[in-house]
Image 1: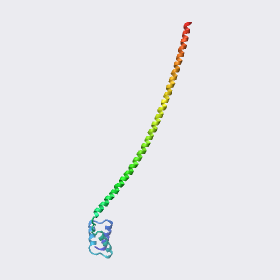
Image 2: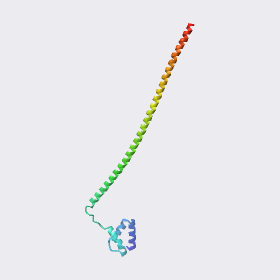
Image 3: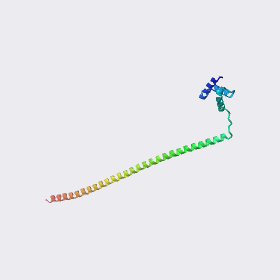
Length: 157
């Protein structure tokens, strides 16, 4: 393969457009014989990127512990946001209860006042009825007395 073909293959590789076979060919060329001086920097970079790295002992456990810590932080954040949401919900519900209770108390007070006003009107009407009844009875008594006098005078004549 000449240098232009290698450059175009590298460009396709860096753009993520290579096939599996092209990547294998590129690995084979970069790990094999020394290339032209202008491609040696690319060869060194490519070989470092694809070199086999030894994993330090205990890395998996440390990563696992770190992930668990992150999960705990995330869970605590979710719990905290739920608590804040519940506080808002509780506050809104309490405000609504206060408003509803105030409206009910005002309505009950208004109802009691209306009931008291109607009772006072009914009591006044009872008093007026009793007074009218007493007046009519007195009128009837005097009317009967007058009629008796007129009736007795007619019998005497």
